[in-house]
Image (cartoon, rainbow, N blue to C red):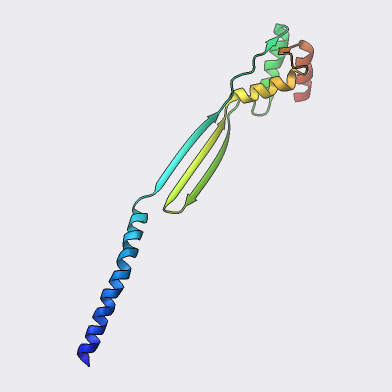
Length: 129
């Protein structure tokens, strides 16, 4: 009876090791290394072609552009996806200064002729105050 008991527990031990070994291998593989990716994307368009009727129109436009909230400043958007221990992905999108310039040109050049007049610049300046 003692031999049968010893034999039975030894069989259980070997069977337990057979199921435990794959679990240990998978745990070691997942725990030993992680996948990390960090990506920064600068999203910036080329500046719209624009001319000014006079130096005063240009000065008014650029002074107003500098007063805009985040005018010419970079804005960031961050997306992060992660599965703890195994995988982490971070993507940051940075908005370039040309986008703020283009938005200001579109707001200011009301007749869309590519030329900003003093009157358009003054109206634009009045809307930003």
